[in-house]
View 1: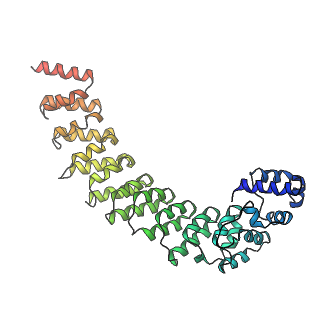
View 2: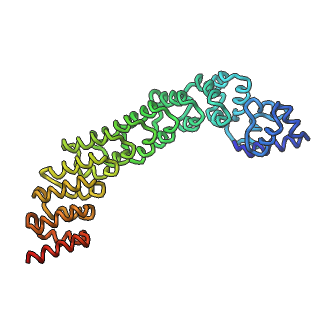
View 3: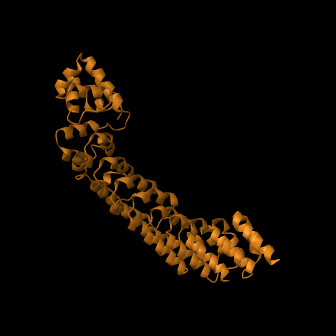
Length: 367
């Protein structure tokens, strides 16, 4: 329906009858301001008013709904019938006609924007849900009560023969209850998931559902990008679980680097210590995490170099992120010979002028 075309058509019919807006308003038992709004395309007459307009102008309700334009359809449209029955407070009659195939779901879709959710509820509760396709349910979704939409979707999943594409699930997500959405996700969880699907659904999922999906992806060794896509919506406890998976070698530490922006300080610290203390240490993981590390964790890494547990050349890659205090400590130990003197030249570009002057003075004094 085109609200502006309908308004213009009402205006045309009124003028053809040589009626004023006030006269039409009196006939319809509304204010003349309401008629003015119809004709300007700012609002539609309510359901109960369309039969009065059709009677006064001697046209059908369908003719009004389509602004006088002929509908090129194989079967006559019955949107006007729905409006008439609802105006007479007979929603069960519409249900019966739809179940019998006398009124099509498309007709209900056409008038849905005009209906209250309570009116749609009365129609839908008596309907055979198999009359709807998933596309039609999507069209009705913004106008249905949540419980009515949930029931239609549940029927489709449990008894319908139609496979539900992921893009349809995303379209329904804003209107479904969390339980119904979870049912949809569970129905498809064994399918080939794609990150774009999860990004579309994630804002509407509960924390527990996000956690469950991440655990499923990890346990089934699915595409890690799926976890990355869900990370902005995951809770702290989920990241704790992922780090535990890393500790038990169910996940590789380098996988978790992509989650660094979402990890808490303590979680990053745990991950770094896990990597460094592992016999097969992958220093590239530490470098990837460096922009997200707190001073305390970086200080611990510096101490590992000083204690000889991490080779000195590794720390150079972290120099842009180290505090001057850390740089000074490393330079002091390099001058003392407790760690490789080569670090002096490599760390010098990151030392402040005062610190560098101190190093030079110490070097001259030793000479």
